[in-house]
Structures are given as C-alpha cells and as structure tokens.
Length: 358
Image (cartoon, rainbow, N blue to C red):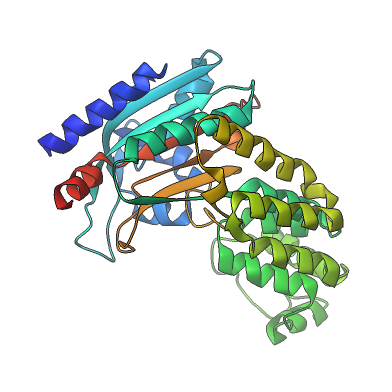
C-alpha cells in the first residue's frame, strides 16, 4: 500500500502543477442526499451506516459527487481540484477485488470552453498512463440524450427514456414498447380495459398510496393513446447506438444521421470541437476509438463526453482511469445554479500492480 500511496501523491502533485487545488472530502458522506446521484451499480455496493445525529451516512464510494457539492456551495470560477484517498465499494461477485482502494482525481469547473476542458482532462490522464499498455475508449452520452429529446413523442416517454439511458436493457425495452415493436403484456391490457382497477383489490398492500396508483394508471392510459415512435426515428436511434469507429469516421457517420435528426446536430458539432481540441493537445484522434454507447453502464451523473483507459489483454481488470462531463450534476447540487464540469479518476494501486508485472 505504501508504494500505491506514494504513486497517488505523485499523481496528485502532477495535477497540482496543472493548476488544481488539493481538497479532502470527508470519508463519511450523507447517504440520503447523495446516494441517488450514483448509478445502480454503485448504489448497490455502497457501505451505509446510521448516525444518531446525522442520519444515514455512507463511506464515500467516489470523490466526484462530494467535490461537486463542495464547489457548488462556495467555489469560485473557474476552479480545478485534485484529491487522493480511499474509496469504498462492496464486492459481492468477485472476492479478489478490493472493497477499499485508492483513487486520485482531477475535476475542472469552467464555463469558458467545454471542448478545451474535455481535452485538458483527457490529455492529462493519457499522459499519466502512457507508460502502460493501455487503450482508450471514448463516447458522448449527450448525443444520445439529444436524440431522445428530439423524438416526436410525448414528454412523459422522453423523460422515461432519459431516466434509463444508463440502463441499456431497460432503455431498449422502452424503445421497443414505445415504437410498437414489442407486444403489450396481457396484464397491462387487462388493467387498461378495467374501468375501476380498485374495485376488486381490497386493502392496498405496499408503499404506493391509492393516489399514486391512480396516477400510474392514468399515465398508462395516456401512453396507450400516444402514437408510436416512427420507424424512421427508430432507425436513426438504432444506427446511432451502433456507431463504433475511430473519431473521424464516427463524426462522419453522426453527421449523416443528423440530416434525418437535426436535433443532434449541436451535440455532434461539440464532438467535432472536442476532436480539434484533443488534436491541439497532441492526442492522436485519427486512431482514438469512439463508441456512441460507451459509458452507459457507469456513473449516472455523466451526461456528455465520457472516456476510459483499459489494459490491453486484461478484460478481467476494471478501467485504469475513467472520466467524463457531468454538467447536469452541478445543477442538481447547486440549487438551480450550474456550471460546465468535467473530471477523471485514476487507480494508483492498479498502476503499481501493472508496473510490477511488466
């Protein structure tokens, strides 16, 4: 652990040299306020305890959310932060993986040029891991979200799809249902045909109130009368989800899709601006992988550029480093205030382990 901690401090010092201020969020974080901001995977693996004075607390599963909360409370603009310390996540499927490990990070809050700050964070992390046999993967969740918001369907349907962007199977099931590709379950048809769904159920069991159940039934009736998403729009979404190329070719494919769905044009041009900024930072974008679906099973607070660095030939290992843009998270924690933000984390312990194996 000593060698890993020394590496963590060295990485943090590099980020300090890039202009970041060192911060140290508490190990114990308020669970009720922050837990829902993480993805399903992290929520299921968080260590939660109870405090008589502070209520439910959790051992921090990452640093980004508490850093955003700290910045939105009283941070100046622009701002850059770095940190190094332990994070805690239960391991229920693989006992060989540590439940406590070191994490080093770099977070940028700057509204002047999002493409430039995306490139800044990616390039700093790329340099930090360049001595290892790694491959980089990138994506942009913002393009898919723009496509969903551009669909000619109800706001309720679009909200449901946005909510499940980070759950690919559920997202696909909703798309198939809203487009009429999947059949309506018999149980739902029976519920929709029932003029009084409460007539024969007796006492209500469970946490939902009668009014909540009524609202849900009303929503199902509304959805049943909503026209299906068109086959043309579904073809665009399907093609978008299948974009998997190097950045220049991905950009070409996405621009073609924008002809049929202009609502994604702004997000696609954001990818173009980021590509130029990455090139300006010395990144070989001609060989940089881009996948439109990348990042959809990671942290649910990412809503734009996402990336990860992985060890070649070691699919059994987690990402050595990962990061992305989380503009919407700043709004959720800023009581209406918001600022574009992007960051990344690295695993110094894994770096040391891999260096020893070289």
